[in-house]
Length: 201
Image (cartoon, rainbow, N blue to C red; front, side):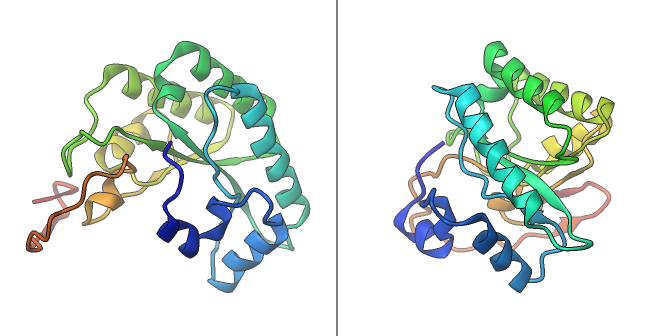
């Protein structure tokens, strides 16, 4: 997963700083009226799978300890497609889901390749299989899996046990992908949303 840009770091300082206290991050979300609090969502390192998962879960434990009455927390994970397509990484991730019973909601963002056309969904069978395994396991274990920025791929995963997905009218709402080269000043295309198709036209 790419490092955050300078602009992204200014807008969301926790993406660039591993030192921001968990309590400050939760307070930022409370101030903005969040009804589900998230951990920071720093990217998992495929070079140190267990170490990066342990660090994310340790941060999640601190966040759980800082919750106030009636608040809910989701463990926020950001990862490259390798975590769902490579069997060893996928198995490590699924084992972590099994071990971490204290997190009942998992908020998982997978960064798709940048060459995928706007508004397209990934046709990679290994990636879709990885999503399916994750959705089935979380459902079997009584956990909720939320898949933001997945569009129709997330909608498909509802059939396998995912609890929710994110989509919208813009391509960034429908996919979390490696940034492209920019739009080159093209005029904005007017789009319509057809509820029966659950897709933009």
